[in-house]
Amino acid sequence: MGVKIAVLAAAMAAMGVTSVQTAAAQAVAAQIVPAQRPVATADAKWPDGFIAFALPYSPYLFDLVVYAGRSVAEITYGTRRYDPVTRSLVVTDLEIRRDALQASIGQLRVSGDEAVYENVAVDTRALPLDPTTRAVLRKLDREIVTGDVALTGRVDAAAADYDLSASLRIDGAGTLEITADLEGFHVLAPLEGFDDAEAGGSPKLAGQLRSARIAFADAGLASVLYEVFGGQQGMTAEQARGTASMMAGIGVTALFSELPGGQSPRLQEMARGWSATIQSFLTQPDRLEVSLDPASPLDLASLTQGAIGAEDILALNPTVVAGTSQLIALVDPTTITLAPDGPIEAVLPAAEALIEGRGVPQDIARGVTLLLPAAGSDNRAAIGLLARALALDPGVAIAQEQLRGAYVAMLLAKADRLSVQNASLDALRRRLSPDELAVAEDEALQRWRRTKIGESQRQIEVGAFEAHDWSTIRRLAFAYYEGATMPRNLMRAYGWASIAAAGGDRIAAGLRDNLTAAVSEGRIVLPMERARKATDDLWGLIISDSSADGAPDADAEQPDVKASDSASPGSPSVSPDGTAEGAPDADDGNAADRPGSAD
Image (cartoon, rainbow, N blue to C red; front, side):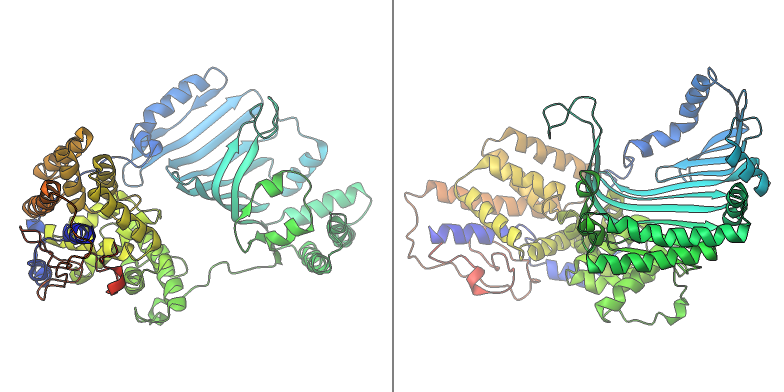
């Protein structure tokens, strides 16, 4: 039995790259001209999500909304169009009128990840407002309220992760900003019989809070509020300012003292600090910011169900800051002199700043150059940043000798369930030759095999071939093709599908035929001759094993499994007679990894 499994394992390892010519292909990689290579256009044309699909038709959808809305209000606009560069709906001079309501938006711009309303104006003069609000607006000289509204969000629809921000600026009053980073966020409707919920009850929030922030920058509102409310109490504006500051100091401390566990010395100390900060803002209004930065994502259920206690407040790790603050440190790009092999704790922040263009003009190519060595060392944070960079600019300039490493990192990122855009992978594939792609996919697989889940998967594969389990081999073929739970490897996807199909699996036959057609039509790149040769070699081993009179002697001498001198690491070959000429999986070079007689 040991011989059989050893030979099958060696043959399966050979499927990654089946010829000793791989080394020569790597040596001439830099000489390959992109224009001479096959172009794969499999899924780059499909929009990423329903919103991206619908946006080109948004002017017509806008028309439908306007036609429906005109039954309840007078609606007119200047122009509406779809902008293919910003991929957004742009509407100008939108006006809405109904009796006392008069509102307008100078320009509305809506895309898949942002909605911006500029030059918004609401005429409140004919609206029935309470006397205090009316007095504040008159003191501000803003009975026609003007300003801007901006909503932005980065969404991972598959994981239900949302990084959201909203900004409301009111001319002459101030700016309110809110941000929230949510993980696995859902609003669950109440269903009778679930979680003791009753029909018609309140929705339930599910997910985790990574961070949140709310900030207000005063632009004249505070002084007017002191004047209006002070006048109502028979005080001057300065007297009202002092009273508000004093009451806020007492109120904040008392608020937290009354919470369950509120007498905690740590919470009391923090509350006194927050109280002093708020008093400072009320005395000298400028900017006040409250941030929540839990050490680890906090379950939203603990904040929305039951009473909030001191432990919940402390877990949020809140901070309160008053006064003008520089949210982003501005950096001279010439001062970023890190080498790619510099300390990772310095490389990652510098690369992120360059990729996102935060604090420094965006330079994605330079950020990628800094990241590639760390990504090649399987640093998860570096791989995640690299995926982000390629999502922003799939065609970013990468040295030819580094393209394969970048592609390997992206395959590992997708297998690790990080967010990887198909357009990013396609852009890298178009810049690599079929041989380079096969080598890269095999390298990614070998690196993944060093993980516990990768080693477990390897044992499943060996067992499936040993047992002629065609349905499992077919599932593995799809897994290699999709690259969602393990690194994509088209050589193995084709080979495993062909073998399962030969064993009678009709679904595997469909995958095999689809891959063949996709290669012929240029939708994917795969060295078919090598794939077929490797498949034939492995099938020959299966046939010879099936025709044997009995299982091989467990004590029989093992085949000579050694790396070919001319092949690159992880790229063994199998001769037609079944003799393995390369390391079975070359995961880490340890002899203990290789199947022995005990297997």
